[in-house]
Image (cartoon, rainbow, N blue to C red; front, side, top):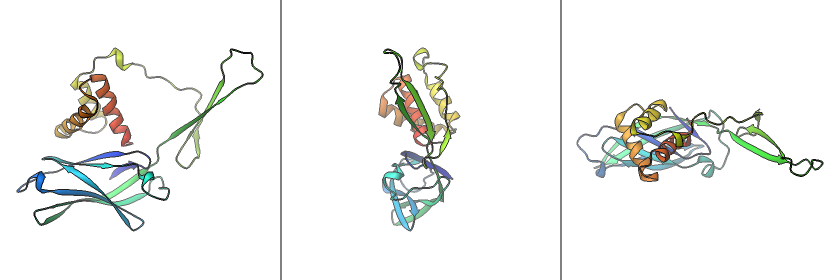
Length: 198
């Protein structure tokens, strides 16, 4: 089962095995059935995988999607007059947390004093989850660490991608986006998984 945030785009990578046909002869679509309407997203097919880009659903679906809502989904592959239902399952909607903050100025304060900042954390349905008192910064800064390919592979493994071929596909995609800078790649790979709202 795949988890998708209703307000974030996501790349879904399906691992495939081809025999007797080349990727160039195939066309693949990831389809979601919502309220009797089928939404289709074309996939990019390679020797070992099909990558599907799913945009933010809240920009496509004209009703709010509920946290935990299951949507029937499938991956269809066509080629050389053949049809294959390569994957058939459900997608689960996960609502991302949003932070709303406002600055409250104290009109009676002496000039030079800092304004107060109040913040609350909301879910998509605007119910307050918690009101944090402070935000903690990361312990280590990226600019103090030399990022190597091994670091990037370990990050992908921690995010749940164990397959070496899929790791290489994700790495190549991120290199195409930001270049070969280790720090930028680390951030891009991290954001890749965050966009997927794991």
